Amino acid sequence: MGRSPCCDKAGLKKGPWTPEEDQKLLAYIEEHGHGSWRSLPEKAGLQRCGKSCRLRWTNYLRPDIKRGKFTVQEEQTIIQLHALLGNRWSAIATHLAKRTDNEIKNYWNTHLKKRLVKMGIDPVTHKHKNETLLSSTGQSKSAAATLSHMAQWESARLEAEARLARESKLLHLQHYQNKKAAATPNHCLAHKSSANWTKPNKGNGDQQLESPTSTVTFSENHHLMIMPSGENNNVPNMNEFAVTSSTSSDVKDSDHDWMRQINCPTEGLTSLLLGDSADRSLSTVKNDEAEAGAVAVNESEYSYYEDNKNYWNSILNLVDSSPSDSSTMF
DNA sequence: AAATAGCGCAACCGCATTTGC
DNA sequence: GGCAAATGCGGTTGCGCTATT
Image (cartoon, rainbow, N blue to C red; front, side):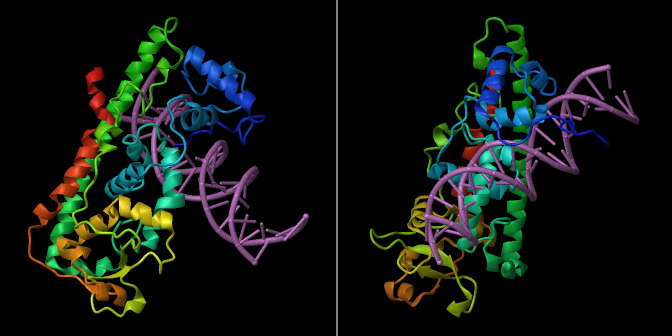
């Protein structure tokens, strides 16, 4: 389907926005709403294409955007939703109050992805690097099938939510246009993180998502972390993890904090994919074993569903507190 | 102090999807 | 139902800032 790009007109400005341009765009949208993005630049007196204006507005000028450092809860949410949804940034953004998909995408690419890689976790599959070796076992197959089923279900659900959000946005815009004269300036700006939605992070922002694995216990001065068995660890099977202390790792302190605070959710997910055992708990690890650098972890028989129930409940709770709660708007 | 490498982020590009006629 | 326009989305790029050599 051939479509002429909106920005191929000669004379249209590209590159960074100036404060004057921002002001013009802001003033116009506050006065009229954005309406048709294609016609907006001309009306607003901007030498930009509509696409560029839309991007500038949604990613930067919108008044309901939260900027600055991501909180641990936000990071946790991103990682878990990414495990569930993949690179569907806009869907992920609907679950993070006041964050844009672009910002989340950038943060993932520049921070979170690297951290997962450092931890030996594939940022695409959220599986431990060695994990594929286990995929031939019946248990992991059924676990993966179950996970896949759940992920598909949630994915479909989120798509439906996104659709509802779009519809509500449209209704909201119509409402604004009808009441244009009396409307407050920002009233027209319904977006995926519109203030009309119930606050997505309320509840999930504070909730501690629990990994299906047991909690790692950290001492004050030695932040223990679960690390993938390295090639040099000479371990006989993949169910063994190296345990390192913060003093020997090239991982920054901030990474330790992060991993400690989020209780290693990705590792939990990895374990989940593995159909892994909660007996990975490091609380059972003896100090000398830890110092030796490698620890054999028990495999025990227990129900896959029971063990991972909390973890998935956490994700479902996260999803449940999504903007789709805005259905009360209708 | 200058050069350069690395990082973070805003913005662009192009494809996919939705909408309107 | 078909087509074109409009919009949304994700991948990528390029620039400015900071750290390192």
